[in-house]
Image (tube, rainbow, N blue to C red; front, side, top):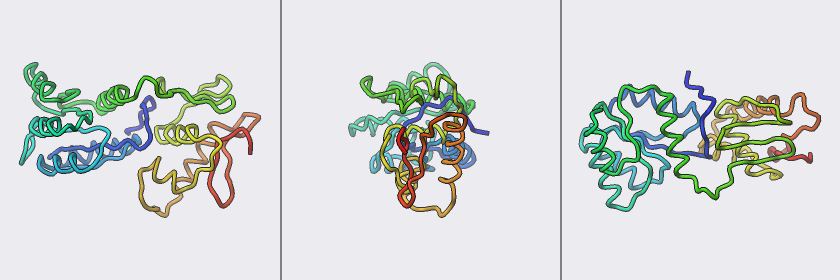
Length: 237
């Protein structure tokens, strides 16, 4: 339902969602997690402000009207504290003056409810692009396999390869660390955002799917299993 093939990804993107509507929060959290993000949720303004000040997040999604403390107040206090984390304001107030107030308070973008989930992802992608330094590498190559972060495109021997969001994130991590042995723990922490072993075969399933897509039908396999150690993306076994 939430599979978006054109999502721009960076490793372990942490999002704080401050939203008091439990149903909306569950819906958005589930969709963002399925799209490859790690999400934490606060149900009121005071809890949201405390979490935003205490922990590091890549993006904040803040509802404007909240119990305990409103969204614009949260943004103002964060900015006064020197917190520059990008903020996307979510609000049912959609008049021009409302949007201007949200941006003047320190918000980086303003999305009016109700909105399509695909638009939310697109707004998050735009904030990610602003965060990425212009000097950061955006294209990675291993042999004839090419991954482009800006276009979210993967090719091998000029043949387009379509990956799901989690598969893209997994391949991106391998390509950033080409020729290195990557352990299961590293994948759980950096690609899935886990700090524990969920005791499932989730890694094996995704590795298998990724291997089929990038290696099947090509002369040289690139994704290797290193027995007893992990995996490696390399031209050399």
